[in-house]
Length: 458
Image (cartoon, rainbow, N blue to C red; front, side, top):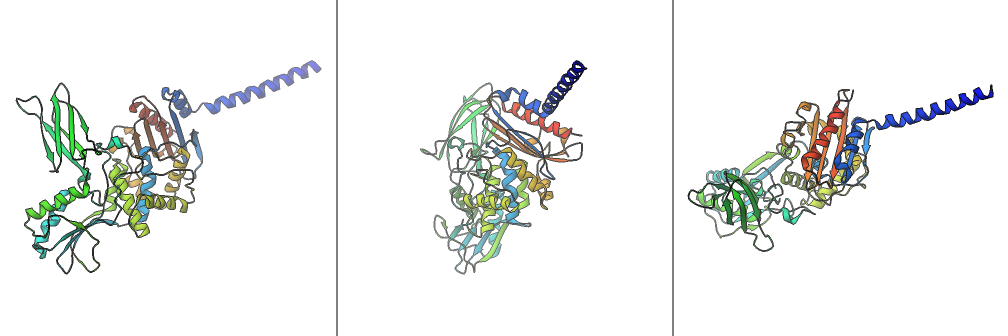
């Protein structure tokens, strides 16, 4: 009898141990866990994932969720809603012209990232019908934001990247000019034109070849007004180059249009001065703040994100907009929602700076707060879905069920936003893949696989 009892007790212990072992195995059998841990990227890179029920913040899955990493452009999904709140419904970016009693004109700049030369041209043309054919002096009021034209921690060797132009009160034409390279018959080098016209020298070292592969160089510390083009050319191509001196470019365009429409003024240059309170409005170009949101959320435009937030900080604090005030604005926004910003480091508003440090669990906490806010519908309305912007060729079968923001810097890829699963729940997701040497497409494929698993939850 004692032997039988011993055998039963051993059997019971074995069942308990096996049962516990099976429970551990079942816990690990998570499709997302398998995707992450089995990825070749995971051997040397850092992968961090956080997925939460957006309605209540309950965690569904996490991996390295507390590590502070570079969020890249997914940071726009965090900073821009704070700027939207500061600007309020109906805010307009207004580029205005005022005239004082001494017939001086004041261009009151708005830092509008959508302003174009064509709009500026017609704004000046309309002055002729408003008794402004002859004026005294012309001033630029650039007081809306400070004069810092690049983000903290931005890389000096990105100075010729069209994705990272400078930004300021003088935003115009996306702050880039184009060099259009085309065939030059009977010559070993192609010809080029500059549009819109910009006072800069272009050194053409491009040679005809079997492919079009053009390299842009500019030594801002030595010769900021000289751009060197090298490489090979086969088919026509337009190359966008950031404008190095935005105030000069803006003044160049204004001077050109004043001459075109025969508007006389004193002096050969323009000074800066704040617009007098008693000056009369004689013309303006307006863009709704909501018109800028697609360029931020869908196309990940850094100029738009930085300008939008910096101007919003001016509106919130009733003072000149600065990067420091923009950071304070974002921190205030989430603090008021009950989310501490102590665990994060913010350096800019676009995510370009590698000084930004955010954990995926903080990102999903913030996304849950946004989802639970009354303004979420407006945020979601402007977010990219598969098939839009930077998601143009990704997860197309999830359109209508995924609202996401991508992020890409050298050796960094990120994805954040919301996914509606088949079970009807909305999940907040943040994925950061950092320090990988594989092609970007491999990191993007990993992100897409995780999102597809979230969508398939029943």
